Image (tube, rainbow, N blue to C red; front, side):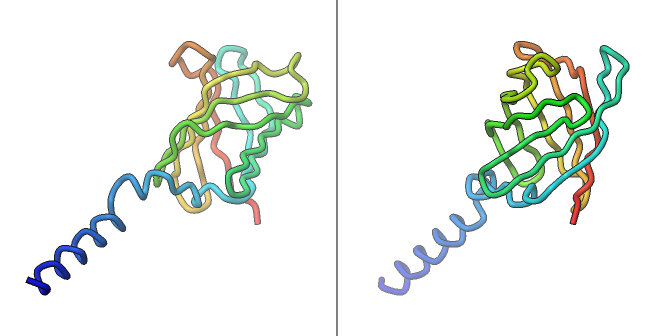
Length: 132
């Protein structure tokens, strides 16, 4: 009986370690600084962007537009993340409260997609590269 209980506890421990729920909260793959050029589909414009991730802080900058803000996580998994963007500086140059989706392409590249609040239509996109 004691052997059966020990085996069950071991199996429960293994299931907890590899369960999807434990992996879904891991956003460590996003840590670091990411840079690239964004493309605004509906305005046919290019602009620079820089994402800095430290732990649970997601700071976004759009240097060529003179605006910046932060991203509030909605869902983060092992290869994809969704955020709500809040512009904190330069609100006249950047749209506030948009939806951001980030997808991991490789260890050194992520894809950025942006849609305005209340829609799923992508209005901006970018490939960002990890900086050392």
